[in-house]
Image (cartoon, rainbow, N blue to C red; front, side, top):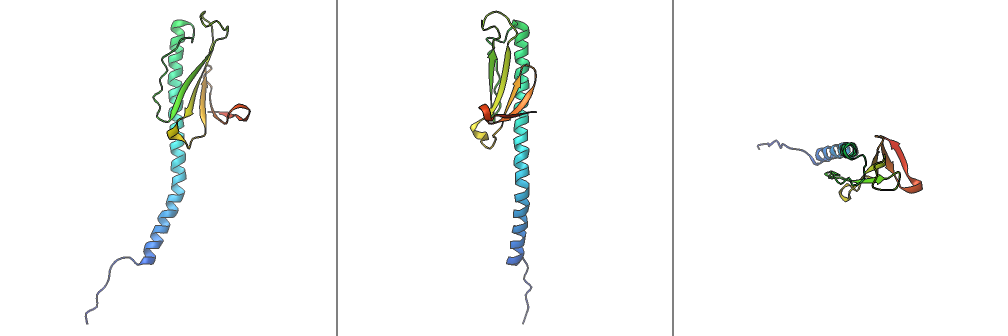
Length: 139
């Protein structure tokens, strides 16, 4: 009688290989997710700095931040907004004024609970929460 050697994997060997792959994936995915979140936040920081340059150029030409309407909001994951504070409350005469640029997560970035702010002094902060529960740190 002729004996045939069978080649291939046994079920046990296959289950061990799948278990090893699952363990590696469980370790790698959180690191990958953290890397993606940091990258998106860094891109938002770049967009805030770009808009700050646009604001400063506008101020150099007009001596006010009032009526600035050239905000670039091309970020796919963060909404960039701008708030202007008129120091002398007249909205017409040139004054120093202050601005605050904010990047808040969009709906397609729901895992991100932080938002980023850049003020007219160039200070970038990353915050969680709002109001009295607001927790910010310099970035």
